[in-house]
Length: 230
Image: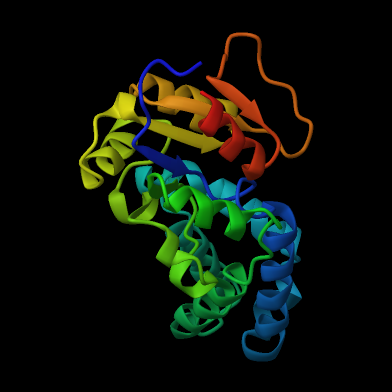
C-alpha cells in the first residue's frame, strides 16, 4: 500500500512507454543509410557497431556526455568525419535524420488508453535520460511536464531531476509515484528523491535483492488498477 495520497504520476519513457532496442536499431539503420548517400567516407571506415564503440570511447571524455546522449552522438559523428576527412558541416543534418527516426516509436498498446484514464485523476509528467520528443511522437498532450536530462543538465538517478518534476507540478515528492523499468535509475533514483516508485517490468526481468519498489506492474493497465485499489 502507498504511504500517502498520490497527486501525480511520473513516467520513464524508453522500455516503459515503448520498447527501446528496436527503436534504436531502426533509427541507427536509417542514419546509416543516410550516411551512405551523404557522408560515404564514414560508412567505408566504420560499421554501425564501430560507431557505437567510438561513442563509448568518447563517453568518459566529457561530463556532459553522461546526461546528453544527443551531444555524445553528435561528437562521435563529428570525430568520424574528421578521421575520414569528410564534411563535418553535415553532422547536424545527420543528427536531424537520426532524431526523426528515434521519435518514430511504436507505443505499447496500453499507453494511450492508460494515460487518458490516469489524466482524469492525476497530474502526469515524464522524466527521461534520452532525447525523445513527445510532441513529435504525438503524446505530449498527456503530460503537464516533461523533463529530459540533456536539457535539464542532470540525469537519473540524481535526485534533482525528480525534484524538478515535482516542483513543476507543484507537489511534494511523497505525493508522486514514479514509474520506470530501470532498477537503479528509476526505482532507486526515485525513492532516494522521496518519491514512491513502481517498477514497470514488461520484459520479465529480475530485480536486485536490495531494491524494493512500492509496487510492480507489467502493464499500465495494472498500474491504473493498482492506483485505484491502493
